[in-house]
Each structure stands twice: as C-alpha cells, then as structure tokens.
Image (cartoon, rainbow, N blue to C red):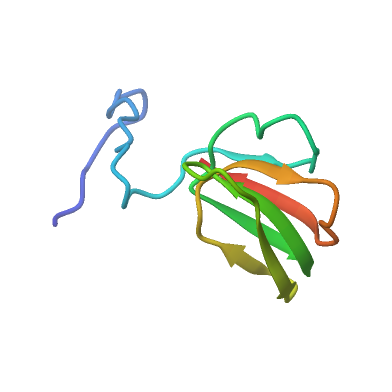
Length: 97
C-alpha cells in the first residue's frame, strides 16, 4: 500500500473501527473486582499485570471459573461479565473492549 501524502490542515479521515470479533480492542479500562457488580463493559480479554488467581464469570455462562497461577503480565482471552473479588488475588487488571 502506498503512502498517503497530505498538507497541514487537511482532514484525512474519521476513525471507523471494526467491531468484528477479530478486530483489536479500542477501549482499555481498569477492572476493580467485585462480588456483585458486573464489569462496566464486556471486555474482549483481560490483561493481568500482577499475577495470581482471577475468578471470572464468562459472558455466556452460569458459573464462575478460576484462572489460577497466572504469571505477571499475562492475558485472559475471554469475554466476561464479572470479575469476582472473593478468590481473586491477581492485580492491576485491565479490560480491553
């Protein structure tokens, strides 16, 4: 693909992000584990900054799932509705939606 040449002040384009399942996330937000409240947005995945255990409720599931022994800087590639406080020992959780 060739380069796009422009002059200062030219309006190139507006952002039009794909919402396809394979498209990258466009929003990142801190996740505060909570035993009752759902995450504010359904993330495409969760970055785990500080390792440990993360208890989640997958978006289309009826039961929680434990991701145990996660190392620092790991990633949970799952859409979730909840990240539970009870049992979650990992920290610095970032949702990507």
